[in-house]
Length: 226
Image (tube, rainbow, N blue to C red):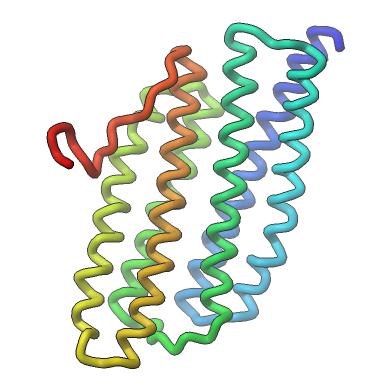
C-alpha cells in the first residue's frame, strides 16, 4: 500500500470514529428523552440504532488492523493507529450503555417521570454528552489541553451520580417507590461509566500528542484522598 494511501486510510478511519461518536451522541439524546417521557417506542429506536454504531465500529477496527498488517506504522502514525483502535472500543461501549438504558425504559418500571431522580439523570445525560463532544473535538484537533479538561468534567458527573444515593434515602419508607428508585440508580451508573469512557478517549488523545501514555488524575479522587 503506497504511503499516500496509508495517510488516506488513516483519515478515513479517523472520520469513521468521529461519525460513530456522532451517532452515539444522537443515541444518548434519544435514550434520555425516552427515559424522561417513559417512551418505550423511542427506546426501541435506540436499540435498533445500535446496529449502525456496531457497523461503523467493525469497519473502523478492520481498516486499522489492515493498516497495521500491511504498513507497520511507526512514530506518530503508530500512535494515531493505537488511539483510533482504543477510542473506537470506548465509543462502541458508550453505544452499548445507551442500549442498556433503553432496555430499562422498556422494562416498564413505574417510576414517575417528574421525580427529582429523573431530573438528575437528565442533567447527567447532558453532562455525558458534553464530555463525548469534548473528547472527540480534542481527538480531531489533537488538542491535549482540551483533553485534560475531561477529568474535571467527569468529577461533576461523579458528584451527580453520588447524589442519586442521597435522593434514594427519601424513598426508604416506601417499598414500591424504593424499588424503582433503586433501578434509577443503575441508570445513573451507566451514565457515570459513559463519562469514564470519555476520559479514556482523552487519555488516548494526550498519548497521540505527547507520546506519553498516562492516566489522567481522577478529579473525583484528588491526590491524598483515597
